[in-house]
Length: 152
Image (cartoon, rainbow, N blue to C red; front, side, top):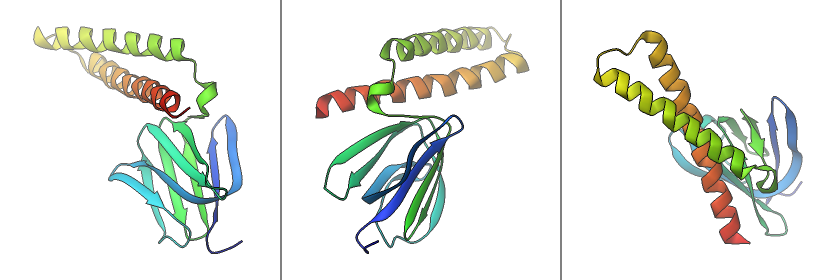
């Protein structure tokens, strides 16, 4: 392998999306912000935020993958993504993502109404956190779809 490429692997509990494909750059949004890794990068490990993971092939093509969170390990010759879930642009069901967004918004609204009345229980708080996570995932998927469409 040349010093101008490294291998990228993207997996989730239910699939191996990309395995050891040669790339010249990888970028994503971690907990500390956006980053780009290139061959020879110093090693690091970080959480991934829901959204786009992009990579550049050795031929110069810019490709994207939607991730709903997880971890990324960057080593000088390899990048490994352990995603909660991952999808290629054509795999995302936009209607399903919109329904998930609407359900999450309804749950969040109900929780805020209960909180305003002083009736929010510990169980309701847990449900609110789950709804916020689902809303973030759905919104990231919908944003990813929009971005992908604009690039075609």
